[in-house]
Image (cartoon, rainbow, N blue to C red):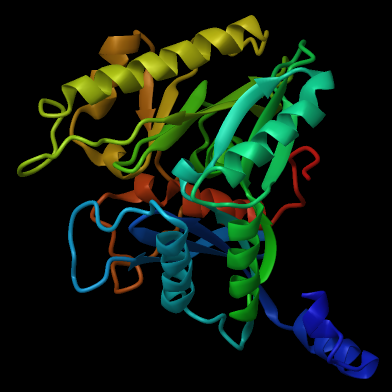
Length: 347
């Protein structure tokens, strides 16, 4: 961004800022997945946020269906980034669009480290990213993993790929508020958007997802907790997906959620056992998946559902066969765009 500003005089910058400050602000969440982009837009009405619209855009070319092209090389990664920037609509001239972004869950690396291990962990993450298809240094973010522990949760992603996307989205006219791990955005925004305080939020997708917990205090406030990746649904399914033809995958998902909750207890996050596990994502729309997970874990399970009074009407801007749970990340990010950053320090 600084390289762009150097071409503008001080007076032009001041004039543009003055004009921009008078435009209505829309808060935009952009959820980048392997095959699709999900966008949610929030507008404030008398300071109260309203879900204005959602847009779901395919990243598949030539009408392809199914898993699509794999991102398995630097060349295919670059093609995917350029495709995202081609498909994303330009920011509307009449609004200031403040945007929060999440990257595909498969791009992220999570680990739990000690307070004195951050420098070593960062070096390790750099090596992991340089030896992967990203071939770049890592951008890392840390936050406390528990209420009464010195352990930290670390998230890492490719610095080069992230900067390319952020710069490209900025050039489309958006004000980029930040890039967030999707799982953290989901868990922290859950109560605000659904009115439920969950034990954890599990995002279920064919391309992989995440499970994230909350540190819930005695006075009811919550902060970021653990976050782990969940496996992709790699099984080729003939016909409609049902809980019967994905049973082995559900077993694995339930085991990962259960292991994450047990570890959160060891870190003394002390979640209330009566709080539900919340399911979000496209696969949360599968009939009876909440009951299937609940029977495997023996905890109450709820499906993510927006609790606001107003929703987008059925139109070309809201065409989501998976229901509201598939928009959970995009809406959570749009909510985050209204706030200052709540995560720890990054590098």
